[in-house]
Image: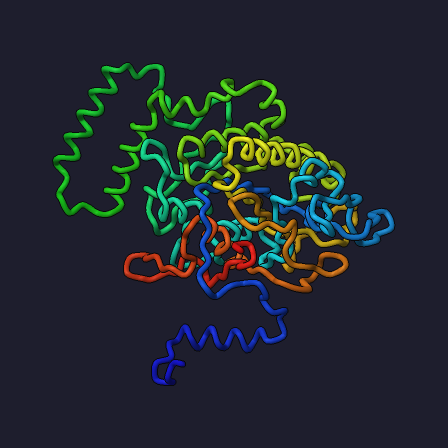
Length: 428
C-alpha cells in the first residue's frame, strides 16, 4: 500500500471518482490484471449515426410507435447461443453468434452531438483543448506496424476525418483511405499527364531538397517525408492489385452484397496482404435517407440498413473462417451511441449513451453471444458495465497490446487507454 506521502494527484482523482461512483453497477468481469490475445489484425466496422441496440443486438419486448409504446421495432429471433436473441433482420448473423460477443453495456455521457460522440468512439476519450488524441486505428498501427512492410498499417474505407487520425502520434501512423472500392485509394494513381520521365525528374528534385535540409529538421518534416516515401512505394502495381475485387469469384462477391459488402470483402483482401487495421464505414448510399440516425421517418426503412449489415458481416465471418483467418482477425462493430426504447413524435428514436451495444467477433476470443445485461427496455445497465476505455482495452489486448502502457505527446505521458480494463472472460 502506498504511503500518504507518495500519493499522486492522479491517485487522488481516481480515488475520488471511485467514491463518487459508489452507486454505479460494479464492473464485474473487467480485469485489472494483464490479459493478452493473439489476433493479428482488426477489421473495424463503423455505423455512423448511432445504431439502435434495441432494434439489433439487444432486442426487448415489441413496441408500437403509433401508440407510443416503448420497445423494439422488430421481433426477436433465437441464435446459436441459448438465451441470446437478436433482431429478426439479423437472420444470417443469428447462427454465427457463437463466434460473436455483443457487448450490450457500453456507455458514455455524450449524446447530443454526433461529432463529439464519434471522436469518443474512435479515440476513447473526450475532446481536449490541449491535445489531439490518436484513434484506435493509429494506436494499433503505431504499436504493431504493418504485417508486411510493403503495405500501410492502417487503411480507412470511408471519408477521412481528424477523429480517425493519428493525433499526437504523427502523420506516419495515419491512414491510407479510399471512398470507392471500384477505384482504389485516392492519390496513388499517377495522373495521365505525368509521364514516367516527369515522375523521375520530380523524384530527383525531391532528393535535392532532402540533401539540402539541415540534419536536425523538425519531427513533422521527417514524418511528412516518410509519408511521401510510403506513397511512392504504394503507388506500384503490386499493392494496387489488392483492390482488384474482380479477381474474387463472382459467387463470393454476390454473397457479400452491395458497396458496403464489397468494402468488407476488400478488408479481407487487405489483411491477407498484411494491413494491420482497417476501418470500414457503413455510412454511404443510405437506404432510408437518414442512415443509422433514425429520428422521425428515418426509422421506417431502418430494416434495410440492418439487412445490409447482416448480409455483409455474416459473409465476412464465414469467408474469414473458410480461409482460416477468423481467429487471427478481430472484427469490431462500433457506433457513436445507441437509441432509447421510446419513440419520438414521428415514430423514430433519439440518442442514448447510458447503454448501447458494440460487437466483437473472431480474433481468437472466447465468445459467448452476448456480454452484460440491460434492463427490460435496454435503457439502463443491470450488470457488467463496459466503459468506452474498457472496450478499447479489450480490442487492444486482443491484438497483443498492453492497454496500460503509456505513449508520449512530446514529453507528456498519455496512457493508451483512459485506464480501461479488458473483459477478462473473453480471453479464457
